Image 1 (tube, rainbow, N blue to C red):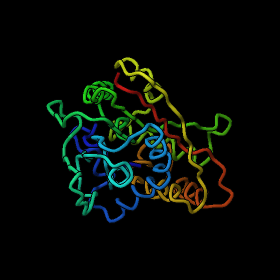
Image 2 (image 1 turned 120 degrees about the horizontal axis):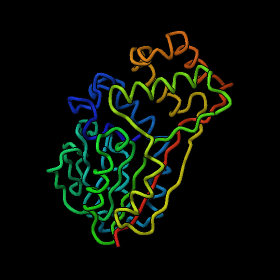
Image 3 (image 1 turned 180 degrees about the vertical axis):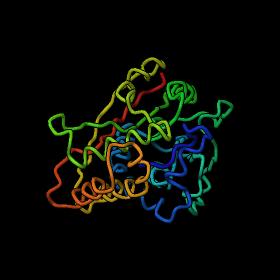
Length: 270
């Protein structure tokens, strides 16, 4: 996944740092594990959209900087702005074309400039007022610029709602909603939102990465559940034994579930 959203939906605006503390020794590893699963799809789409030399790019929720680095190294961009509320995970990036912007995306006074590409992955679903934020992001596009939004969606098996895996996943989304404000219900509407902003060439895709034992994505979910154990149990949906069963199943060659997917939608400013 890209990283912690630059701004939060919790009352103190800190994106539930009690759940995923920026300074936790496994936090960068957890984020990078998710990025390994999604970066090839993200960068493949950005490449297909024609992000090229001379572009000014904004990477929203830059996290540990995997997409930011790709933009710097592979596209010949003139400038890449890495925006996050906590930019400590970016590490020692010294490219003169990089501008690190430590800021809260929900701050309506934020004026980072205008861009030929704006990319935000696994960010908006965590933020309050996300529809208004999409309007602001679209307003930061140069003519011909592209806005690329990606967030999570669930595609659960309707015939198996009681497995330990399903129960833990459902508890996780409930806990994220109650503690952070995470809401994925509007994610399938992203193409319509982009059209409403006057963008053209709007399209979208759904990608569900394979969940297999020992994969980076399986490790991402396992570490996420471990870090959220008190909140998972607090939903009343699961207890420690169910979480342990789901963990063991996720690590087993017998695992056979369709994990959460990523909807990626994009559009171009005429």
